[in-house]
Image (cartoon, rainbow, N blue to C red; front, side, top):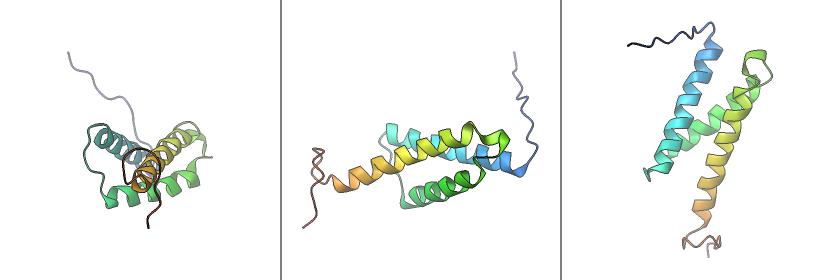
Length: 96
């Protein structure tokens, strides 16, 4: 039995949101499987976040854009916390 994708992309904005969604889920996969997240991944997420903020008020994106923004912010916050937590205990040691 074969299932076909019935979703038709009608604009470049929709394609862009689908690509951002895929990137976010790829990075969540990397994080959950202890795969290194590169600086390029981080910078791409920051650009994706700005892009989503620009289109989040458009009717077709009112649900998915804020959801993706929240996921991106969660990822970036966790990466930032890991950078400050040099000893691994969650104490956020300050660098000397």
